[in-house]
Length: 505
Ligand code: C2O
Ligand code: CU
Ligand code: CU
Image (cartoon, rainbow, N blue to C red; front, side, top):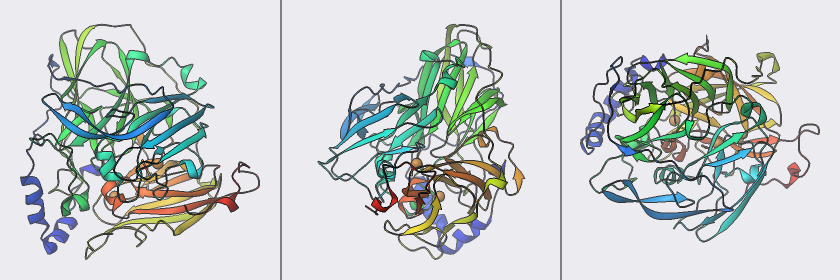
């Protein structure tokens, strides 16, 4: 995989600015629980105690309050968290395609916030644009109709230059969309379906979610040394000997994970960011970048009652080698406590329309860059520009397909996300896609350092201003983001939001 490469250009670059000293400082201040050697192919172990995996509540209300609370993230001490709907992680929203979704955001935070429905194709004024914020003590009603494939989407704040902090402090939750096609498959559900958000935090003696950025954090993103599963450190869950569906979200600010089972065993990818694949694909590991989702089937029927298996992040090279990026660790201990129903792997899943290069009406190139010498702010750019909320960088037509060429010009990986659209990956550095996780409909894609990834983007039907950005949230907040405008065509546009009414907030 691309991530196994070691790149030396960044080290040379850092030599010129004293990055080694920064690195030593950043790492020296962190109690290291990561970096231990992980053993692939280890035998299933004995059952292990841990903190019981948290299951975020199901959202049933009419409002989501954004508020500061104290919560026992670690069992021994409370942590001040920023929340939607009174819990970290935020409540899981589950809705059917075709439904109208209405919710009131009440902002009880000391600063502005909003909600972005990551992956959902909603009208521009419902999308939680970085400049479209709700002040402290204010509220906003979100109201839209869900019209897209079933899938594992999510929601989080998106205020300009504050997204990293607010997400880190706890504001993020699942938005699961179901449809008839998917429900007819009878995939594992109820207790056999586990939405799992993976996040890294820094294990501190005061258990605080402290978000103080040093230069290394601004350059590489805010990396933690403790992996939390659904907001649970050292998470453990009791499971049966049967087939489980895990909807995995990388909700971390900047960390990429190479997910695997601790015994190196096989599991199946059944879906990507925006819904199901055509059939299950067997893998032994996969990379998940910030904001990406992957839908997995993990078959536990082969393990004996009384044993345990862990979902882990394996160590990998390929990011900047003096940071904690690429460090592995345990994510979730699965204790096999009883027998369960016999279930076979499905042979086919959903119909997957394939976009063709011939459908693209034009090509645009986006270079994700690190600026040298580094300014104090705005060292991360797209096509040499730092985000400006009032500037439209590109204009496209609703419903069109375009070929977008996404490049990382440094050795930083960038998880690139497009609002208001879904895309399919054409190739990586000219090579055909082999990773099942790259095969389906996507809204976020990992661009490894120095790599070029081509994607076919289909814009949604809603006209207005949407965002393209790096979902490394420190890169995003630093300016690696741009506006693009979707304009209406007579045929492809819903009528209630004519384009002349759209202004830039
Ligand atoms: Cu998940 Cu523009 O963000
Ligand atoms: Cu988004
Ligand atoms: Cu980036």
